Image 1 (cartoon, rainbow, N blue to C red):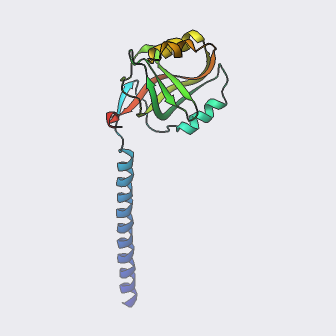
Image 2: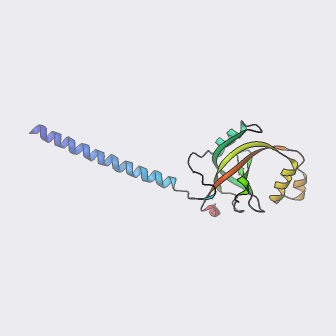
Length: 176
């Protein structure tokens, strides 16, 4: 009889511990989901995922090892430094000590002109190219640079470039 009582107590204790662990796991899952949902995004262009996104530092390292002609399909998150003030047809994104010129596949979509300062997620193809003086001047004009600043552009330069097929913009980007 004594053994039966001990077995019952062990069974009750085991069930009670499992219920506590399950409750803690459920609370942990809810907390993780809350963190993941902390930033709601609006999608522009093709649907892209907010999972497996590279950081600014990670993409900057990738760019350092690339030569003109190299390409890599990636998704990364970074701060928008500037947006074309004509149509929103390009944006410059922070790469730490440089910027990446982001254009949109087939001019199929455009960014809000007031997006500078927001952190966005872009998906597409990263590459390095030599940008001509003419193209540099065109983009400087689109960015609203002065005539003097535009005239000072006299040499081609190595540029970090990106063709995006989709962008995720924080729904509250105006508040950033």
